[in-house]
Image 1: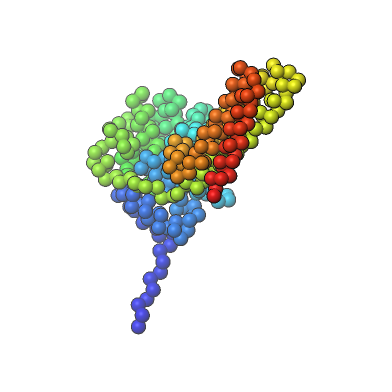
Image 2: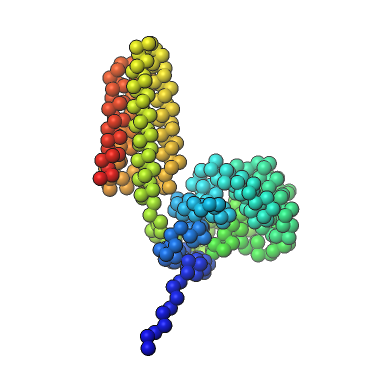
Length: 365
């Protein structure tokens, strides 16, 4: 008689195991558990959002953003995925994008207590102001008995230097749930948002007497309790391979930059027939626009730091790496033409742009 076949572990079971491991500070094993779940469900939003939270807890915001970007790919994106993406955007200092995500959360879930308090906290991280304070008050309004709503109000108020309001809100949070006072020292990710807000309040507590314990900080900080640091094991390698996504973003950037430089150089050369002065002014304006657009586009499209991408390309795809550098250099010759004049500068710009386009094509082989 054959042995019974054990049922396969579901993605949710993998996620629950990861949460238990994260509660023990074993972020590396938690990430491996998520990786096992993703092997059978690579687009599972809950798994990807949990992976992003693990990376955030391990102070790995770049990896967190890569996972969060995939987590929000569904239509419509789930609220937890949007929350963790806003956090990752903030931690990678993309404050404008984080603020837009937070505003979307507040707009799309106006009566959801979790969405309102979390959206308010996220907005205050990225762009604090009256809008964040109004949202925090609304979070208290829709859930007056939830301690986290008052904790968020305390954080937002403290960031606005409304320390009296912050102190009252924090006292109310403690009255509703005494464990809020220990939230900053938690290791797991089940209540990761609460820990994040509590630690933010501790950072602000030095500026005013809010009654917040100051001893705990984020993992990896020198002031973080050694008893906690010893329990935390960060993921040593990324779970998601974003190298191909980065390569596609690089190719697209080079094609846009090289194409724009070619068109601008040809038009500038044609304008010399009308007026050399006008063509030089035009060349300078367009050169600055192209160079600035290339830099911003390159930074915004990449799922990881540009330095990491270029270092990898230099070792694995030198043609594409060379194309990137040429696409950055080519617009500078439009600026050189503005300064010194002369058609050779325009010719060099066109040659470099054409070479970049050719390298992108041949790098695919």
